[in-house]
Image 1 (cartoon, rainbow, N blue to C red):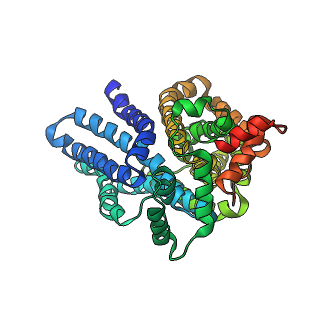
Image 2: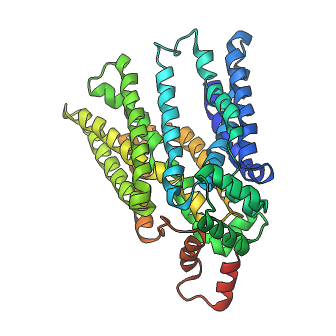
Image 3: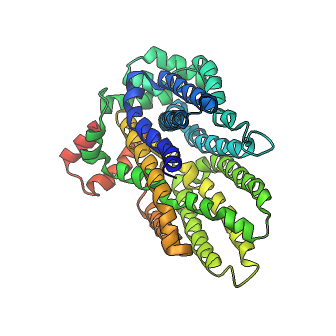
Length: 427
C-alpha cells in the first residue's frame, strides 16, 4: 500500500516541481524552446514506463511518474501562457480556453485506451503507461514550425521585428498596429526586468490579482471535482449499472467534459469571465447540496441513485463551463508581462499541492464524515460565487493596462493619492 500510494502521489510532487521552475525557464529559454525541451522529459518518462515490466522494476514506474509530473507541471502553465500571449485580444478567451478542452480530451483518451478491449490488460499495461510519448513526439516534430510568443519577443527580448514577423505568421499579413501599440504601452509602463516570486508577493500593485488567481485557479481542487469522481463508481453501481459497464459510463463523463469545454470556448468571449464564474459556482454549490441529500437517503428511495447520477453529469458540465475553462484564461489576463511567469509558477504550485493534499486526505475525510464530506467543497463554491460576483473585475475585451487600472481600485481604494497613481502606472 505504501509503494502504491507513493507511485500515485509522486506524480503530484513532480507537477509541483515543474510548476515551480516554469517561470524561470520560460524567461531564460522562451516559451517555445522550453516547451520543446519539456517534451524530452515526457519521452524519457514513457521509455521508463514501457521498460519497467521487462526490467521487473517498480522503481522505473515511480521515476517515470515523477518525470510525467514534471512534464505536466511545466506544460500546463507554459502552454497556457504561450497561447494566451499568441492570441489577439479579441480571441484571447476562446484560444486560451482551448486548454481546458485539451485537458478534457486527454482524460477522455485515457478512459478510452484504458479499456480492457484496448490497452487495459495485464499484457499491455506498460504500453498504456507509455502512451504519453505520442503527443510529446507530435509536438516535438511540429512546434518548431510555430513562432515564439509575440509578447515575449517584444516585451522581454526587445525584438520588435521578430514580434511583427510572429504576429503576421499567427494572425495573417498586416501591421496589427492596435495590438503592437498595446504591447509597446505595456513595455513602457513595466520596463524589461522580470519580477520574481518575492516581488509578486510583496508588491501592492498586484495584491488583488494574486489573491484572485490563488482563490480561483490555485485552489481549484477545493471545488470537489475529484471528490465527486471518487463517489461516481458507487453511484452508478447503485443506479443498477453493472460493474463491467461502469467504465463506459465514465466515458460519458469524459465526453461531457469535452463538450462543455468547447461550449465554454464559444461563450467566454460573449458572456465574459465574471458571469461564467459566478453562475457556475452557484450551480456547483447547488449540485453538491442536492448530491449530499441524495447520497444520504439513497437507501430509502430506489430512484435517488438515478438523481445522483444526473447530478454528477450536471456538476461535470458546470465545472467545464465555469472554473474548468475560465481559470485557464485568468493568469494570462490579470498580470502584465514581467509578473506573468511568477504568477503561473505560484498558481501551478498551489494547484499541484492541492491535488496532492486532497488525494491524500479525502479518503480519511470521507471515512469520517461519510456523505457529508462535500461540505468543505460546498462552502468554497458559495464563497467563490460571491467573490466572482462582487469583487472580481471583468477582463473581456480589455487591454492589459485597462485590466490593471481596474485592479488599482481594489489595490489602492477609490481615492488614490498622486504618489500611488504614479507607482501603479509605472508598474
